Image (cartoon, rainbow over all chains, first blue to last red; front, side, top):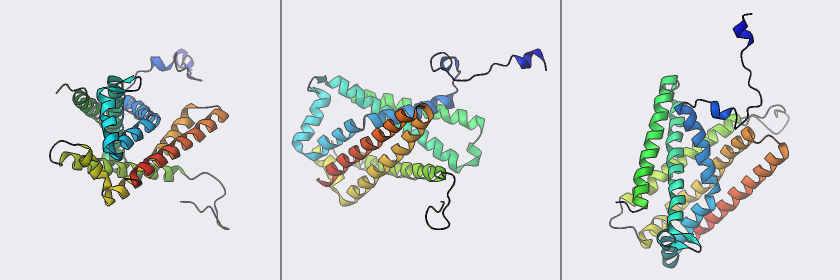
Length: 144
Length: 121
């Protein structure tokens, strides 16, 4: 056995702060972890999503309350914060949606399962979701 | 899918891998189609969207049926995903069980609220 082979590092009990930060994440790895992250965000914000659904469809009065929450704020929460949370949801949905389509495409197409496509499709997912988030975010905050 | 009843039931292994994987795909496709159906109605409605148009979209019977299925699909889809994430990152069994129970309560509760909003329209 050569000297080099003996010294190969072994990683056990990966530490989230010491080891994980040294990882070089590929685009596909970013898409993967963000898919989980965006899913978790939407899970945790589910009551807010249903509150928006409830107030926006239930009555004219509740619809006015819904609009006011975004424009003026509700209770002690300012409107810009509600918009920011909504923007986080928009990003989470767009990322989860596009990354999900990538998953489905890889499930049905054998030619999509290789390193090159994994990289290029991951870049496409990030580009599409971030661009659409910026476009819709600008609309949400009234930039156009 | 394995037989889990009678004299021919499979007594070893879990065998829910394929079921979970397929369920997650089917529910995902349903939710994607719902997104397109909702988006099309918003885009192709004439004039600015006020309360009447927005509530009108959801008050159509076919849309109620579709939205109902999507709420159920969402809870199911989120449960499979969350269970996977919890199994990957939460090692202490007691904590994991507690979080899994919380997830189920959270999802069932939210689904119930959504369905209530939908059917009183």
